[in-house]
Picture 1 (cartoon, rainbow over the protein chains, first blue to last red):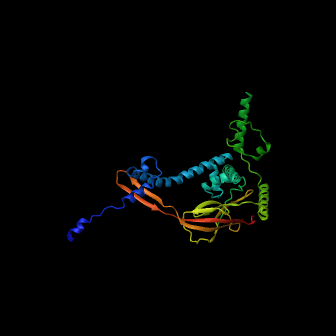
Picture 2 (cartoon, chains in turn orange, purple):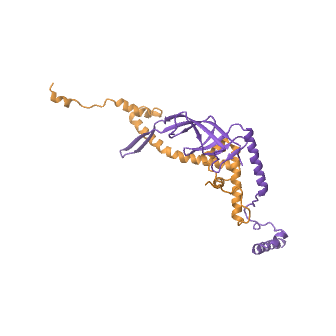
Picture 3 (spheres, rainbow over the protein chains, first blue to last red):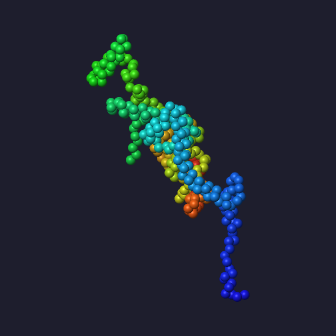
Length: 149
Length: 186
């Protein structure tokens, strides 16, 4: 053999095409139709699926917050309070439970939720009296804030 | 005519009260006819007597203290603020968080920021936190792993633009051992 033409004969060829294709198809095995078997159809579906999961991860947070708010609203209406009144008055009482916790308490600790609703209602009434009474009525007991120094 | 007279009479007394606000008027106890404008449209709110309320509060606090001292509670739950999240926690339950802790596996940890503690008959609500001398929540670090590989992909069609990134988050698993409360309410 002529040694000078040996490098011209050596061409690089793709040898692991099978595994590259399988790496995409493994994410498509649970799809419906031909896109779980055929690479050309599968790669489009798999790309769209990945993009959808990335976007959904951001939207999940706002969706869960909406769900918690709906649940807290339903539970507070059972106790005769609307959601803005409940949340606003709880914050004014310096109770820092977030919506996830309030929703969990409303489901699993109904007595605790009832006492929180009563607290919010009482703070609301004290707020009304403070606004209407021109400071002549005595200060509310639940309106006193706690100072941490 | 009688109705009109009542209405005018009601308005007269109302205006006189508003302008003079003399204590003599209050002691006379004028009966104002109930019309659409004789009282404000919101329901009248009356708070209970503060002295009696203070007595009632002291009684309740003392009862709860007694219950805690004698141990008349079953399972305690606590709302704990940890790793910038709030967890509703009982004893013997597992917590998974998406971060690394500087503690080793098997270390006993005390969770200090307790927002609320409760049992079946009573709950202690913190404003916003409960005192460290009141509650003690202990946990053990069980596992420090990584999450399953999450895929982050961007793709614009017809623009030959795609990026794929695999994200692996560190995770820690804690087992809550005990929640203890001390009867030091005041």
